[in-house]
Length: 351
Image 1: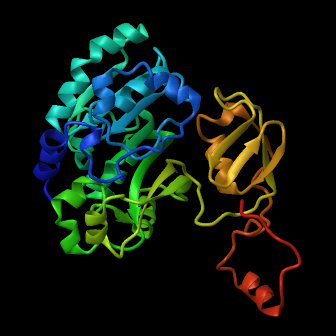
Image 2: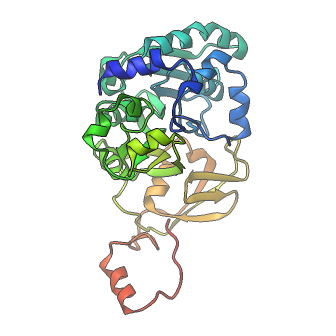
């Protein structure tokens, strides 16, 4: 699939969200109230040109510098602009002229609505971020919403994102994944590709690409199965299954391949805006305010070495290693030996 065919699909074939033939490039209906509030202040034409598959609005963004890869007409850019505030900055990159024209045409309108202008848009390919006028190590957060599946070189996107992030920065993005590698003939189908299906990565290949790009220990935040809801296209993708998933990838030194136990714990202070009662790092780390929460070394780094550090108290250090964190050592010969001897005496929970 070529850049030109994708540009034509999103610039000429699709004139609005209603032109999509499947539900792959559509966000779920449920979203937090604070996200609904910022979206209510985005121009109607920008909203109708939205083709995302998830929510890319992580918490604790005030004052942050954010990059949106494949920003389209700018829906997420203008929503994020409100969340980072006047001291922050949001930069959008997209390859489709028609989409960027809509985004730029309403920039003044949004500045008047918000009381500040903190966005900019660049034309370019997300596989070639090094060719854009973007400073390496200059972004706190990079987001992307159902766009990497459209890229020709997905691993290059991840490498470029890692290069542009500050140490301790994160890539927080939603995309479509397949339960197996997409056959070559299917990948050449322009409609299936434009509908965010036949360009989808096999989920395990994505994990390998992310780690090679420098993002150790990818964390799954949310996921939902895609039902497509178009009988003709369902038949063309069978027997593959697809899911929309949101991951967060941290640019951190010292992350280990497995969840190692150093006897550490954290206590959430309840100080992140929009999360006064609990903070969710990923789908299995939901930390209640004021409660001691045991964590592995990697999770410790993801909180202590990032913009979240001020919102937590930290207990312990790395002076004593206790082995694999309970429940996370599926490949350990010690756990396998124990399983062979008989049932475990108690349920262990993954860190």
